[in-house]
Image 1: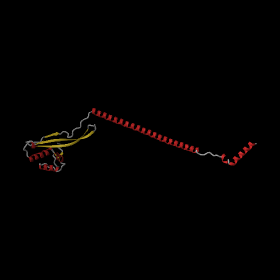
Image 2: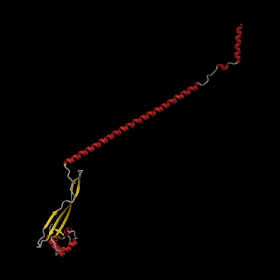
Image 3: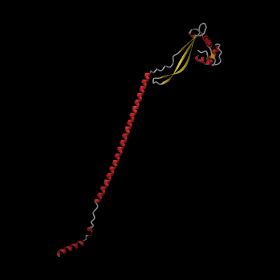
Image 4: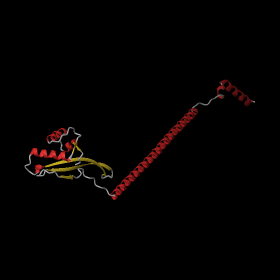
Length: 225
């Protein structure tokens, strides 16, 4: 424990409030007024002696006071996918004060606990290469699938355009055929109408009974001569 520990820091290690610790220090004969005041090792030992005396010393276990100080840090390690992630590690420092029978200075024992958070498994280079190769193969597969879809879409568009052109040509042929049929029907109707019209009889319109009798008379006269 550093000789420059403050009252507030030592109170945190003891899970006490600074005000309570100041009262106990005062009762032990250590005068401290503020939480920022510094505590020496002698001050701490005097406080521990007072606390042990106030609680009695019926067994060796009751002569021990264990302080646990926690600190949290962060480390970065790669996870199973190869990506770095931050892991919080809690480190506990344990310090035990033992009061000797002769009242001499308390020995100090420190122990550092193992990290609270388990470390992530390390990934070797071969595993990273395998994962990189797998990612490349997956990307190549996606590229091929995209190319196939693009080709299928192009062929479908060409087929649709071809069918649309064929449909337009069929419709145009049907329209032309209908127009030709209509024209032929019109010509046939005109020809039929012309064939049914009566022929004119101009010469016979002026042949009356008088002209017929005159011709007969002339013919008879010629025969008599």
